[in-house]
View 1: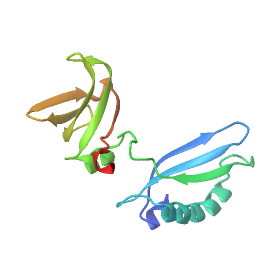
View 2: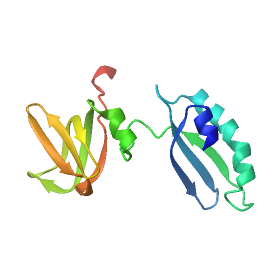
View 3: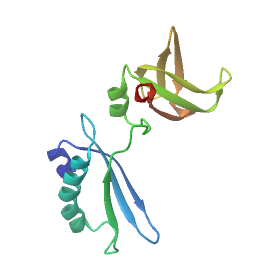
Length: 143
């Protein structure tokens, strides 16, 4: 979307929730992280564009612009590239080596697999067997 490109913003996901209070939420990311000012600025920029596009065919809705959060799943090649060399958490659908949860440094990925290094051991996972992969969040410095 041109509005996002002009502001150096990546649209990560768009979600529409119907119900009593319909809401369209646009999740964004920028290099260096998303703050409240970035969300507000993009909200103001995208609002008139969405009014023109009329995504709900005239039905009222609330527009929200948000960060996808620190623990958002890695989905795209860009997500994986940004996390190369960082610690990630992997949750599997079914156990491997008796475990469904692994953590380690992301060292490689391609269309079909992810590779992490946990200490001296390198582990490979088929993407189809991964329920969720996201950045590992370290809370140890918050004490």
